[in-house]
Length: 288
Length: 269
Image (cartoon, rainbow over all chains, first blue to last red; front, side, top):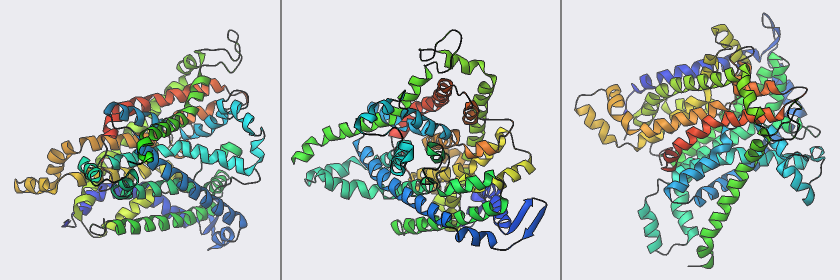
């Protein structure tokens, strides 16, 4: 049971104030801008929902939305099962666990703007480790002209970068399973699949929900890493939602970029709401 | 025992080694390049082994300053995030108050808001507040994603502490803040360490806020690396800076490895 107590607000007040400053105020500003035509910030004209109509009516927006969705779905279907599998493979001995986790987590420490550079140098036909090997198995030198190969590189890069997070989260949940559960399963003659299905997987639900949410949104709005690989090409095949927004911000198009931000935020709120619904379903007793 | 069950340990080992090799491959590439001279200089020919890239970092005052800036803003960010997150995590874990689910939802929504969506207004807001081009600006900006994630991690740790502890302390006449400070904090010390590590990890490598909030001054490492790209990019130096930028994280990771491997209780498991 939780205490029913509105003094809870005092405890969350500092966090609410900080997030209000760096989150809510900028968000309100963006909503405000999105209804204006702005040349310089002092002179602006109310134009209502024109920017929204323009974005919603453009094929470019829907194409980017489709690409981002496809990318996120691919990422989830690869990284979540892979992350679970790797976390199950981590050995039991104390020393090895620490070392393994430390090695696996290394990609998370690379500055994001260097990640595309790392992969491009890895694929470099003259000096890259992979770049010198893969032409022998039919990898063309002009892979940047091929949309599927560009996507392959992007997916491999994101999998390399972020699967470790899924592994760490899953592993943390697995270690909370008491040894007696496994002993009971062994006595009952449960095979590895049954142990996974009925003992390990249920313990992973909460963490997986969070991992799915983080991986979905971060890949859906991939920005820094995606563009330098192939400059959005070939023929815009790797132009994602956040890249479009980034272009408008660089051009200082206040109105359109604000309207775009608001649209993206609506997507975010929808996703967060679905997430909290799923969370309450897992855990009906405590709703917070 | 089926044949599958007997060969499982071998399969597991092969899969794990395969994944570690995959995780390390780009890093090996990076480390190799960082020891190669990639621009012609009078005394070293291109392609030969050299330590020149690393001494180049030390000789460049911009790069030295960048390391200082990065460490400064990450430390400030942790000093803001953790003390603010602890009471909030406590409230979400222990108390039921009006609107708590909606507030949690709002926090999560801010965590998954990509920084690029808020770049323009945050830049304007922070320039009005006069904290652009300073490490404070970046530290505060990064609270957008670090604060919700910290609350979430800490909430898991606090929920693992038995509620009887709270009640005993209240019976003994301690108030809630006193309880948090004297009894709860020692219990969740490793949780605070894990939280601080995650803050470091997400903040150290972020580039969108780091870019827009530092146009002239206070540039962190990631932006200093960006500045190295140009007409003739010394890719060896770039790789050496990247390797160096990963060292503090790697040291922390190694120090934290037992906390991570002991399993941290996340999301009420």
